[in-house]
Length: 417
Image (tube, rainbow, N blue to C red; front, side, top):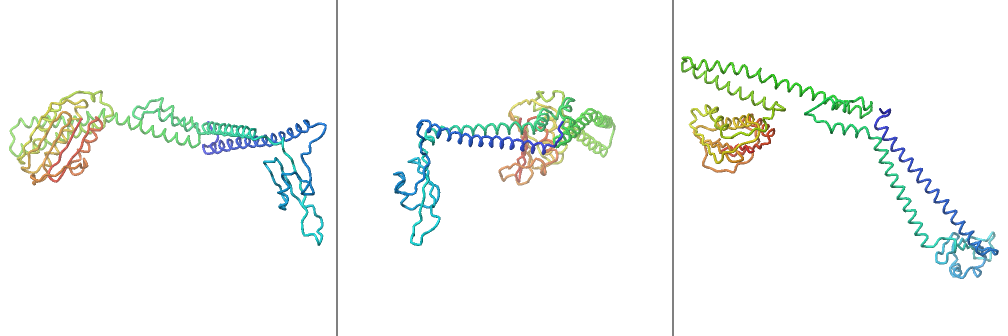
């Protein structure tokens, strides 16, 4: 449980990290200054001890250019301005200052004084400077690494609830929710901050998903009986009526009722098949393609009455499919029905070609059958029946592939597995 919001904790973590790094850098620079001071004094005392009892004259003042050390005389004659100068080759530091308090009217030149500090033996050698540079670089790199590590640790601790929630959500399977999943995502474990709000939202979403799955299971378990029973009753009544002596008009009406009942039965089976999440292992059943194709043709043959259209079956192979036989039968019924419905009068034949790994249903949609055009892929639900969109969903559920190729003369429906 956290007392502060996630935003506040991140801000505090960042402030703590910056404060710790600032203190570390401040201590490091202070130590470097003190070390430099001590080092200069130690070198100067060491040089004095080496020349004891006579003391070295590192710091001296000069009024005349002629009394300056030889390396500085030529430079001093150029009348340098007041300031500090350094001569690295000679290890000398020079301060130039004016020594005139009053100017004589006849004196046009300014009198200069020189303070010379001989640092020979006090400043470190070049090799020692390089070692010190290496040491400082290593210290800076170490501090940077420690700072980075500290920042990572602090930020991880600050965002730990988010990572915990993300892991809990990643381990949940929405299709198979359990009581343990609800415990892992329980919002009371995350407090009242932003993470708690997110956890409560996810918890409510999972509850809605669970309720939806439960309703779906209840529907698929009960709707099958409730919807199929009236169809069965109607089918039985039709069969009894067919055995009666009916007039030609009554027979035509009974045929229409029979076809509508068959269509309703197929539609119910199709939607129930799509609604099921699980189907008791029927998705791994092995079945032959040709019997289902023949059955679909027989069921939809009435659509070709008075159209004078033939149906050619080109069985190039006898394939078997691994999957859901009812779903495959529904898909084939939809393809055959659409082909029969959209074929024009006397513009056949309708060709059904069965290959080893695909089924092709081709029908004519124009009277100009002699012209040849290259088929192009068309949306499965554009102008060729709503059932083709359902065929697409059935294929996706079973790992099959469906496509519709159309041009101005013909439509080719392709179902592959």
